[in-house]
Amino acid sequence: MKRIRKILLGCSLRAYLISYLELLVSSASLPKSTQQSVTRDSGRFSAVLCLIAVMVFQQPARAGVVAWWRFENGTAGQAATGDGTILDSSDNGLNGSPVLGPVYASNVPAATIPLTGDTNLLSMSFDGSQSRVFIPDYSQLALTNSLTLEAYIFVRVAAGGPFSVSQIIFRGDDRGYLDPYTLYLSYSHIEFQIDDEAGNRVAIATPDVTFNVWHHVAGTLDGATGTMRLYVDGILMATRNTTVRPFANLTGANPGLGIGNLQSGNYAEYFNGLIDEARISDKALSPDEFLIAPATPPPALRITAISKQGNDIRVTWTGSGGQSNVLQSTKSAAIASYNTNFTDISPVIVLSGVGASTTNYLDPGVAYAPVLSAPSGNNVTTSTVPSTVDCSGADTRGITDSLGRALPIGSLLMLGSFSISEPTIQSNFFANNVAAIMSNFTPYATSFKVGDGTSLPASWSVTRSAAGFDGQQIYLLAIDKPTFAAATHLGIYTAPSWVFPSGGGTNTIDLADVTDFVIGAQSGPLTINLPVGGATFTFDDTARLNVLPGRILFYRVRLAQ
Image (cartoon, rainbow, N blue to C red; front, top):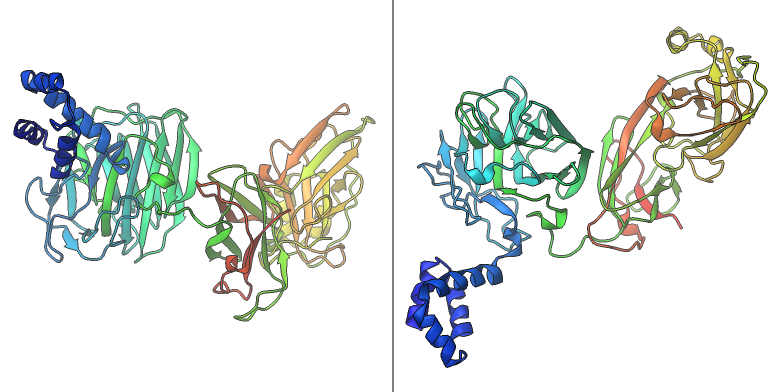
């Protein structure tokens, strides 16, 4: 048995692995022929035993991990010094070196890493002007397919320097615009970027993050599908597909990987704040594989974040794919104990699967029209064959009023065409000549109202047929009241695909298509984030938050039956 212990020690395995494997191969449990075989071929046995140890004891948290810099090998308040002292905890040995004094700090995001249970005592503080960590360009870092970059960050100030960029994790050399992968702070938001060897670049970004609090940030690339995803605190904030893939060979000067700046001090993209648990994986991790991943699944149907963006709100909540939700708010001024009298303020939003979907509100509230007459245009062609337009605002967008609230049921809407150009429409509006706009608008058949086909504010689903408009651009005209006489705001929207069909055809249009805000604007996004686990919907008032700062309304989410 002593011989087996020596073989295992040669594998550099921990003592508890040795003890366990001793139990597995003890003389009492092995037939005599096996014992003799072990004695005869100790070299082969040592290799097999090492392989068994790795197979049996490899921790799930380390599966796919290329490098993991935990910053645990220092003393709080002291600068990191010495080549190779920034240790890699992945067992791959990709150690790095501190440059110009990043300082170990006792301020950490969590005393225990949620995913692994590892004790976390220290983070690394970067001064935003010179301190950084350099990791040589080890071959394991040359990822060209799937990957994940993640770290905890504590941002003190917005990114500065010549490009307003502060690097978190960066791989590259001194050549410009040839950076295989990077995760960084740009101004006040997080970006995840990859470049290919031809200089093609693709990036995705989050909204602004809050300063002086810890956030977990992660960028992933799925090499099989080309899907890039960017997460903050385990919540998907941005996604897109790309054909760009990072490249392997860094042929310029000073190749390597940087934490807290680029890999080289020749460029200033320094991070001002704390970084902890910087980790790189060679697969596109899912949120339940991030270091921040909780030990238990997220609760069902809970609001997780709410913020104010001008007159708009951004609400994030957890739910399950395949179900439908509606955002609600209180109808009027609320007090601290207010928990009744909620009303729907969004269209029905179908959660189609794991991930995030976003709905942007169209806002006629920015287009003030105190005097509004009925349309009187006569913009028709000679065609007499009726065609059909199916128009929906039920799934991914809604209409708000001047306070950013969903237009109530009964607000007036029209589809039609203009005999004047969009610049002319806009110039008339800014000159307060709304009558000139309305006199050149010809509606298709009858008007309709918010709530038609859905019975919900902000949304509708209608069909309108008309003849004589073949090939003309379709416009949606929205006002904030049930009648023209009562209207105070006007919105006019369209999209390139909104063309009236000819010859009895049909065109299906949706607010999700809108890109042209002729009059009015697009308001802030409402982001729906879904959990990884298959949680079920159960609604209760714990999904309601305190009043949003700057408003006098409460918000909650209900399951649309």
